[in-house]
Amino acid sequence: MRERDDSTALSINNVLPTKIDPSSLRFESNMRALADLVAQVRNEEEIIREGGGSKAIESQHAKSRLTARERINLLADPGSFFELGIYAAHKMYEEWGGAPAAGVITGLARIHTRMVMLIVNDATVKAGAFFPMTAKKVIRAQNIAIENRIPTIYLVDSAGVFLPLQEDVFPDADDFGRVFRNNAVMSAMGIPQIAAIMGMCVAGGGYLPVMCDHVLMTDGSGLFLAGPALVQAAIGQKVSAEELGGAAMHSAISGTVDFREPNDEACLGRIRSLIEKWGYRRQSLWDRKKPVDPAMTAEEIYGAYDASPARPYDMKEILARIVDDSRFDEYKAEYGKTLICGYARIGGFAVGIVANQKLHAQQTDHEGHKRVEFGGVIYTESAEKAARFIMDCNQNLIPLIFFHDVNGFMVGRDAEWSGIIKAGAKMVNAVSNSVVPKIAVIVGGSFGAGHYAMCGKAFDPRFVFAWPTAKYAVMSGDAAAGTLVEIKVKQLERSGKKLSEEERKELFDSTKKTYEEQTDPRYGAARLWIDKIIDPMETRQAITQALEAASLNPEVPEFKVGVLQT
Image 1 (tube, rainbow, N blue to C red):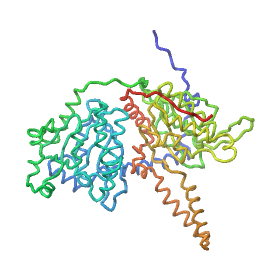
Image 2 (image 1 turned 90 degrees about the vertical axis):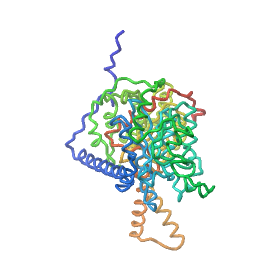
Image 3 (image 1 turned 30 degrees about the horizontal axis):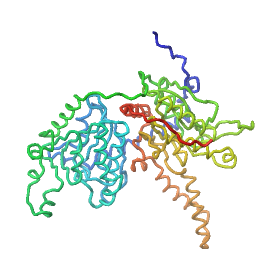
Image 4 (image 1 turned 180 degrees about the vertical axis):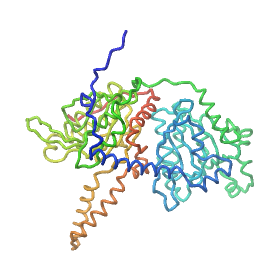
C-alpha cells in the first residue's frame, strides 16, 4: 500500500512565510545585536572551559592524569558531547577563588552511538571539591537521567565536600546525600550506571561509585571513607594511601572494583568496550520520521528576532526556521492570537508547540466589541486555547515545546471580568499534569505567572534552554525598578525626606541595573534554572537532542487533570 502524500500539509501561517529582507536596516540591526550577545556568551564559555587554569592543568598532568575535558574527548564519540550547566556557579564563590562550571562537567554524549549522561569531576577546580552548586549540578544531571532513563557514566576525581561551605553542601534534600540516594533509585529503575575512579574519591563521596553497576579504578587513585591523616587522628593507625585504599588493594583484597586499569586512557577504553556490548531497550511512543531541514535558513533567525518592546516581531518567522520543512498545522489560528499553538515536527519528532506571539492582534469579544491585544501578553482566550491544546497533545502522545517571550497575563477590569484567573488556572493545571515530555525554550522575556503557565522550571520541563536574549524574573527591569522606586520614595516621604528628580532618576537607574543583572540568563544558568544557553541558530539541534533523550523513556503515566475551572 502506497504511503499517503502529505505534500498539502499546512505551513506556518498556512503558507510559507515571506522571506525576510536581509538588506533592511532593522534586519541588520537585529542581526548585529544578537550576534554580539552570542559571541559574548561563547567567549565566556571558553574561559569557563579552562577550569582552574593552566597551573592546575599542569598539576593534573604531572600526576599522569588527564583533565576532565580530555577524558570526555577520549570517552565520547567525536563531536557528540552536548554540555549542560556550563554556567553553573558563574560569578559565585568569588571569595574562594570561584568555581568554574561548579567544578563538575555534565552533559549528554554518545558512546558507540548510545546516548549517555556524563558526570565528570574537574580536579583542576579546588581538587574537584563539592561546592553547594556542585551537588546541585550533579543532582540536576541525575534527575535528567531519571526522567529520561539515560545510562549515566561518572568519572570520579574529587576531594569530597568543600569544608568551608559544608553546611550548605551536606544536610538538605537537594544536597550531597541526594546524589547517593539517586544512585540507588536509578539502579532500582534499571538505569545503567558506570563509575570510574580516576583520582581521589574520599569520605562520603566513596559511596557514589560503589553504588553503580560497574566500578573501575586507575592505578594511583584512592578510594576510602577516611584518608591516612584522618585514620591516624581517629584510631592512631599509620597506613599509606595505597595500602589503605589503592587500586591494587580494592582489586585484589576488598574486591570493591570490577576493573583495575593502569591509566586514564585504558580506563576510558574499557568503559567504551563495556558499553559497546549493551543490549537495546524498548524505545518510547513518540512518533519520529526522517528529519527534513526547515525551508527557511537558520541564520535568518538573527534578523527575524527583535528584543525591542517597541518593535514587535512575528514568532511564526522564528518557528519557520526551526520546524521540519517549515510546516505547521496551526490550532485555532483565529482565536486567542497572542499564543500560537500547533503541530509540527522537529528533527523528525512530532511535537506540539505553544509559543508567545509578539505581534499585536485584533480580537472580537462575545459582545461583538473589537479590541487590540498586546503581543506577549496572555489573554483569557489564548489561555483557554492553550489549555485545550496541551490536553489534546497529552491525549495523543505528542511531546510539547514551549517558546517563551511572555510579559505575563493581562490585568485590569476587562480582563478580570472575562475570567482571566480561571483561564490561567486552567492552563497552569494542564501544564502541571501533563505527562508527555515538555521542553522549554526561553527566547525573550519570561515574566511572572506567564513564566509558570509556559512551563517554567517549577513545572518539570525535561530541559530548559535559553537564548542569550532571555530575561527571567517576576517582571521586566523597567516595571520592577519603577515599583521598587515608588516604594522607596514613599518610605522616605514618611520619614520627612523628599527626593529631587535627579535623585529619583539615580535611584531608578541603580535599581534597574541591579535588577537587570539578575534577569540575565547567565544569572539563571549559574543557579541551574537554565540547563543551557544556546545560540538561536542551534535551537532546532538542542530540541532534537532533548527529544532523543526523552525517547529513551518508554513509560507514560495516565493523564489526569483533576478539577478544571469552567
